[in-house]
Image 1 (spheres, helix red, strand yellow):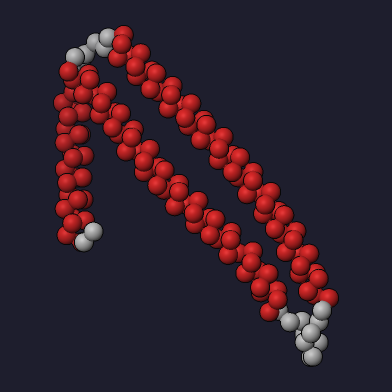
Image 2 (spheres, one colour; image 1 turned 90 degrees about the vertical axis):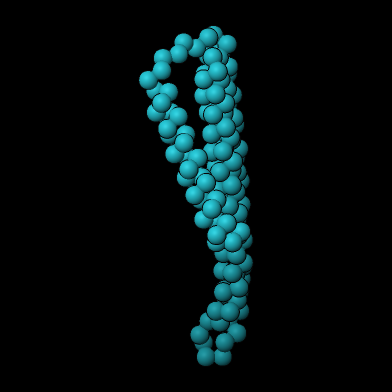
Length: 148
C-alpha cells in the first residue's frame, strides 16, 4: 500500500469513527425499550464471548506451561553441553576457547527469539481480529435497536 493510499485509508477510518461518535451521541438522548428477544440475544452473545475468552486463556496457559518446561530442559541441556565443552581446553595459552560457548548461546537465543517474535505477531493479529469482530457486533446491536 502506497503512502497516499494509507493516508486516504486513515482519513476514511477517522471519518467513520467520527460518524459513529455522532450517531452514538444522537442516540444517547433516545430512550428505547428493548424487547426480551434483543436482551436475550445480547446476553447470549456476551456469554459466548466470555466462554471463548476463557478458552483462549486456558490455551495460552497451556502454551506458557509447555514453553516453560521446554525452556528449562533447554537450559539444562545447554549447561550440560557447556560443562562437557569446558573440559576440553583447546586453547594453547590456557585461556578457555569461547567459540563453542558462543555456539551454545546462539543455539539457545535463536529459537527463543523466534518464538517470542511469533508470539508477539500472533497476539497482535488476534487482537486486531477480535477488535474488528467486537465492533461489528456492537454495530449490529446498535442497528437492531435503531430499527426497533
